[in-house]
Amino acid sequence: MIDVRLSLQRRDFQLEVALALPSRGITALFGPSGCGKTTVLRALAGLDRAAGRVALDDQVWQDDATGCFVPTHRRPLGYVIQDAALFPHLDVRGNLNYGRKRATGERDRIALDAVIELLGIGHLQARRPTTLSGGERQRVAIARALATGARLLLMDEPLAALDAARKAEILPYLERLQRELALPIVYVTHAMDEVARLADHLVLMRDGRVDAAGALTDLMARADLPLARLDDAGVVITAEVAEHDLLHGMTRIALNGSSMWVGPSPGLPGQQVRARILARDVSVTRQRPTETSILNVLPVVIDSVQREPSTALLSLRVGHGDQQAHWTLLARITNRSLDALNLQPGDALHAQIKGVALMRDG
Amino acid sequence: MSAETWAAIRLTAELAGLSTLLLLLLGTPLAWWLARTRSAWKPLWASLVAMPLVLPPTVLGFYLLLMMGPHGPVGQFTQWLGIGRLPFTFGGLVVASVLYSMPFVVQPLQQAFEAIPERLLEAAATLRASPWDRFASIALPLARPGFVTASVLGFAHTVGEFGVVLMIGGNIPGQTRVLSVALYDHVEAAEFAEAHRLAAGMVVFSLVVLVTLYVVNRPARDEAQPAR
Image (cartoon, rainbow over the protein chains, first blue to last red):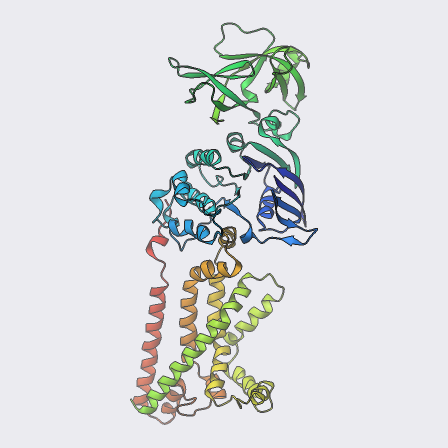
């Protein structure tokens, strides 16, 4: 567990957070610019000084109660920032070796070759940082951080400086990272698509405070959080591959007895996949639609209705009757439809899902 | 050239070499501090370092002479140490040169250190480098052009000083009679042939030094290349 209790008072900014982050998987710190997420990350690394306590499992890095403060260079962490910060006077190999040479102890001697292989940068080793593309630079920076044998990887908007194509190039590497190394990652971002794709846990921050923290799938399904008011609000589910329709190039996935057809997945039946369903891609009808082109229609019950200025957000419980096996779907509809259909909590409806995006395995 | 001229050349080279060495040793920590500090005193220290740029050398020489003289605080201290008095000695010239050439060494170093992005030093810290290690492995190599500039300017400026030398060192052959003073003597004595040799020599020397500086500090080609 990563114990973070920090407070900081600056002239125009106040930070007050208390978090217990899991020491497994990727935790995303998500929030608008200036909400304090980078400050939290920098304080975790010891680069900024906030008052409080920071500990990774049994290792205390900062505890103002005992006057303990471990300087950054003695904390077994890796830190990756937006612009990579590669050393311009060293080639890629020199950059990779910089931290590795300084890491002490056998345990920290992570196999550099494995990291180089993992991030696909073997062919770049003799190159100077200035000759690399943005995506390559970022992969080298990640490898450099991993090569120290870090016990915690901190990433501050590592993809924010990259265009969509470079982002798409590097995301699979981050997924591999998380799959193949049992290394906790704290990931700062303000991009929802990165959160939905990468994170296992989510911390929502606003104005120096934590709005909510918890499992990604739980928080994404909550209609009461500011998250649900974003244009790309929607739930993330973890489902199982059920069968493939090779003729039409589609895969059926199943979650708690409901099934949906999605784009082709390479996964074998039984394998876990992550999918995202945007609220704006879900509509509702009172009668079960017949002869519709929409493939995925699920029976649902309205849990709650949140009226916003021009649209309304419905929280829908999937699965009639059975309380045990339900899961939540969010739907954004117009207030006009809300009133025309006179929708109330408890109403049984059919949700028509226009799009289900497969994010990744597991 | 006469033996006297050769003695003046040797003395000048020794003075400039020793002063530059001392300046690099003193100037590096000072420049690093000036580049990184957020102290309210920074403008004062930066101004003190820059003073020799605007002061007439004779003013500096005058105060140094008073300070290092038999009744000055520095003079009393050196006498107490048993070194004797510094004015009109090679040691006195070195002290004066170090002060006089200070901005020519500290300012290029400071600028070079200031140009190093903080995020690179922070990255080094997250890669287990201690503060000393960060200085040696990141700051020094990245400030290399600054060191070249500082050394060359410090050396060349010391070679060219005249006013301070005259005030502090006088004109003792083999001890304080440097090139610029020797040149002045030749002109005074109407020995224009010898004066020409020295003056032209200094012009060529300065040109060679500056050309070398610009060539060495040119950015390497692959670093100047824009990223793809």
